[in-house]
Length: 360
Ligand code: DAV
Image (cartoon, rainbow, N blue to C red):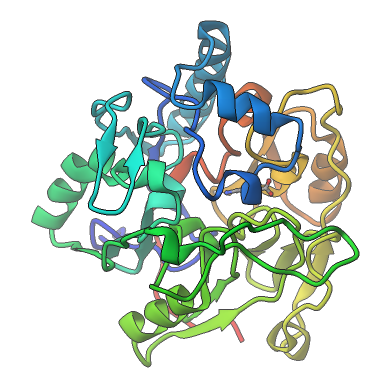
């Protein structure tokens, strides 16, 4: 008989997937300008775009094209027998304020991976580093209530203040030949859920423009002795999240970004893992990318240890996956990637068939 797992149950990126949340483009707004904007946006020429257009709706044809991608993605997931859940939309265009800051609008509900850190049977609302994303958890309240009623442990990390004390004043992103630095201070714990990636009892996290050392320490303190939280050293001039940088895909198979990972953590080398170096992205330079880099090619979704959904057009990676023994499934996603993130960003796993174990 098929074992029944808890309603929320995810320990890694590859146990057979049963249920997932997929984000929506509905209501998506151009992220308003805020302290982290220059620390995240890779292309300097886009900064003026954000200064002028932040807080306004994306052009309808861009939203329509992104919607087509996400519809295809949902269709593939459902055809593979996976239950797909969707966020609830809140008033994304509404300006809001806290005692410390004002935001022209929210951003949307495009990327559940950033908002909810799902580990085992826990759903943790992340203390996110962007002011404009402060209320993005609203989009998942209905689902979280439902999962919690069915036994999941649902909680929030301490809500951050995101006052000026959380950001280095006059921050200038490092250039390629400088040592890594990030915009965040250690004033309070901060992380986006996508700054962490799961590998059973080992959780890997990297500092970024939305994750500081105090955030990593909070995750370890919260999870307790059953888990080991490792900080991964990365080099990225505009760092945001670990899932286009460092990605344990399956037992013994770690995918790394060749530009950003200079040193693979010893634990992988000592345990005989294969280090798979992600090939160069195929996305043409002419393709507009408003928030992320072309390394979203790495931002894949594992359905199990073999089947992997990859962005269509990424032929170098698709070929590499076949050579490495995976079964790639292609999905058009470039238009969603233009305004948001990749296939991993656009989702958050709710239930996979598997148990907590160590892979080292
Ligand atoms: O452009 O490498 C990817 C963010 C994925 N959550 C980048 C950021």
